[in-house]
Length: 418
Image (cartoon, rainbow, N blue to C red; front, side, top):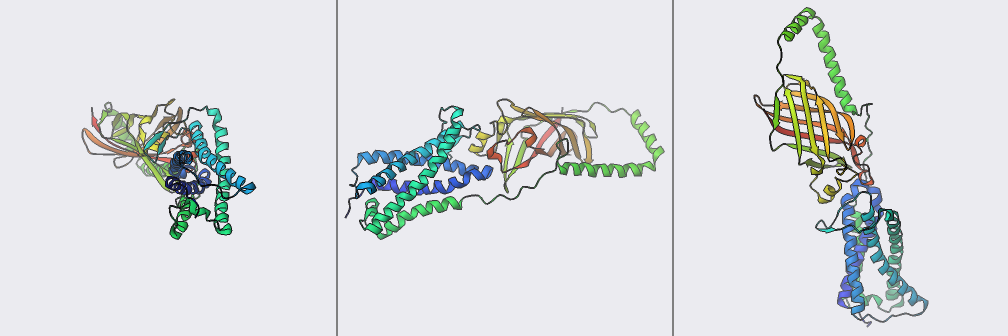
């Protein structure tokens, strides 16, 4: 019976093998997933670092514990030794180049090993990113070839030559282990394929007006125009009465609109589609200055300032990306501002304010809709807006490919008259 490897070497071997199979099956698909692959990309990094740690331990054990003698000499034995050396280079090089790739990427994605242990970025120059990317891809393909050669060599020795080679990497002589442990490789590959996201649904184009509004906003404006035209036609029959009412209205002066103080506990939230799913979050810090008479909304002035660094979607990985240049660019543009002068009534206690949104240094026309409830000196405000992210450069990198073009904004708070 051939001499076996040490028990710790056997455990490390069968721990690394399915992890490698998992990485290979997942790595093939990552580049095409875009934003849908964000969570899987984080898992890929975590498994890669795990392989790096286990491989370092395997190298230590290799020189600490005695190894079985080679069963074959000549060029076949040299080839087997070369494959082993290549596999160690692959198990070290793939995670190291992946780590370098992440560390030198334009978009700095934080890494938490299995969502717990932070992994610092390597102190490498950004210019080395292309080299790391190319090296990671090349090493991965070489690793796949070496992995296949290693498996083929083990099968050749054990079953064709009959020298019992695989028993050397078994805890004991057992047919169940002979079948079960190699099957872990198939399990690792199968799990990697099974957890891949479903194919992305086709993207429906969004028609834009010249000012950046969506087709839905245009439709709403069109409905308002039709309603206003109908009202004007109906009022034309009462021409003299309307003139008299206008004169009365002018004679009754309206006082300055009251200012309102936003009370603690309000919320500004956002949500964006992500290939059939939704990513939702909120801003933890913001202020609003509101001057408005609900009966005369045309005199309103509204200003809201949002601290973009306070954005959170409840996921440490994604939260770490939001301040970066791909999304909010907080370092150069720490706040977003919405301002509007005047509002219009669109229904019972319902209003629309058309103003300007400034985000990442870009200013664009933007409208919001809101309703007021309550009476007297305290009002409850709830509202929403639909914001096109592309004109503001929000989501301008590869990890944003699956994001919907529009971001839904919602807000609610209580305001008291000053």
